[in-house]
Amino acid sequence: MLTVASDIDVLARFGRALADPIRCRILLALRQAPAYPADLADQLGISRTRLSNHLACLRDCGLVITAPDGRRTRYELADERLGHALDDLRAAVVAVEADKTCPDAESKGCC
Image (cartoon, rainbow, N blue to C red; front, side):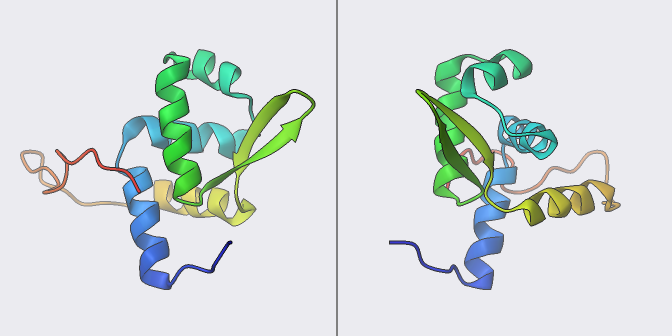
């Protein structure tokens, strides 16, 4: 059963998804166009197993969905507005000190 997440839950899920560079690369690739896992793995230069784990995380976070296409499964952003949000985040200026890291940078948890 699908439910609508609260504002805080939505932001937390989005943040956890973006916390990993590979998941960021997947989201940016899907921003361009829906894709099949094998093609995404080749495009990103990662193993299909590793890609599968990240896609599962993104799916569990509610950011990507699957679309059956014959015997294959295609992945796409769950909502076209996510692509616009990614564009807005990329355009935002983030001021950081070069010798500082984000306190949660070591955390690799998923949704």
